[in-house]
Amino acid sequence: MAVAIRLRRTGRTKAPTYRIVVADSRSPRDGKFIEILGQYQPRSGDKALNLNAERANYWMDNGAQPSDTVRSLLRKAGVLKARHEARLAAKLTAAAVPVKDA
Image (cartoon, rainbow, N blue to C red; front, side, top):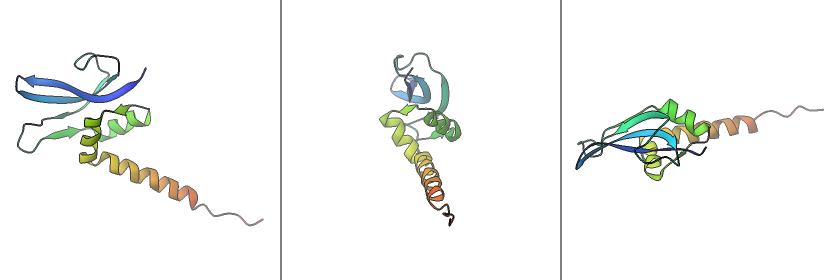
């Protein structure tokens, strides 16, 4: 089962709001989903974005692929930068392990 993090449209006609959901990539846009990660309101004055970053990281660690739009929203929320920095720090600490002299 290929899992995607994508937008699910809600709201009224001409006034959309979106839920950021984890869903099977084969299901319809507004169909069945696994979990709601947050909400995005593009028409509000500040383009409100509410996101559970911890759960988004969990799903990406388990192979969920964000859509292009969700990827840009994750970037704006700082989730991808924090994720990249954590992976880079782990890589540097692994490389900095002292070598024992024989």
